[in-house]
Length: 316
Image 1 (cartoon, helix red, strand yellow):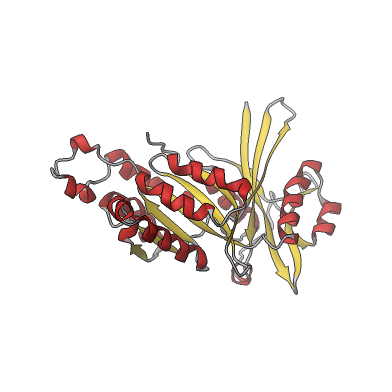
Image 2 (tube, rainbow, N blue to C red):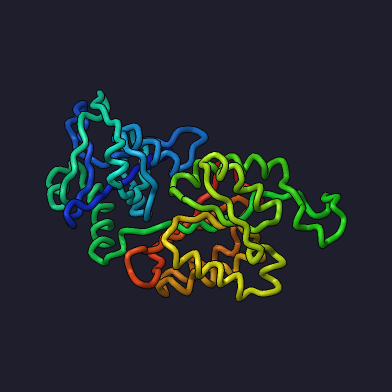
């Protein structure tokens, strides 16, 4: 049996020096990264953000996925822990409501060198090594560009809109509506600040619950629709170029036929080792998303990493 947990290495800069946050648990007298078990009905990303808030009082958005660690528990079960990098802004630090508890006695900010001396478990070095490597390469500070395929739509055969030209009005299936609601927290885990969507109903209705819940602007781009991409794929690419060049964390909702154009454009900003993984996401299932982490410090955008996610409701 496997116990799944999630957390993050929280990081910030103090006078240009990298600092990371460790927690001390008095019950075990140990030092480690904030993390906790995934609750039933919860995704790993939801769990990571929730556990960080509970253990440190900090509200954060997840950055690059650093490591998936496995180690045996005393009862013989395997423990699987996912770690992300998570930048802590001055605003988030000022708003922290951390209070010492039986679970977490204190949160201390240390340099990576100091953290290595304090960490109680050798397996906690792995995510720190990854975080330091990204920092040394100037690639730790990223923004997410989330490419989301719309949730499950009503089948064309069942759509009574009639004409092919009316396909833009084809709505979500009842299951798709459930998916749209279930996507709110997995999307929020990465902290997007803008939602850009195809104007077609099934796309708009996929991201509307998230945009409404987070009070975010929802922008329509006809170039992201099936028809817009089919007519002028270069204009679809132009939309993605603009998104990648901008400094804002974004959700982009589109259709399966448009995904190859979207993902080829993104792959053009990625190192060769990542391009195949990005373009392979053309086969995203309804409601599934590719989270692309884009470095925001260089003159030209650079894709640092990507990861697949979805809600707990999976469509075919």
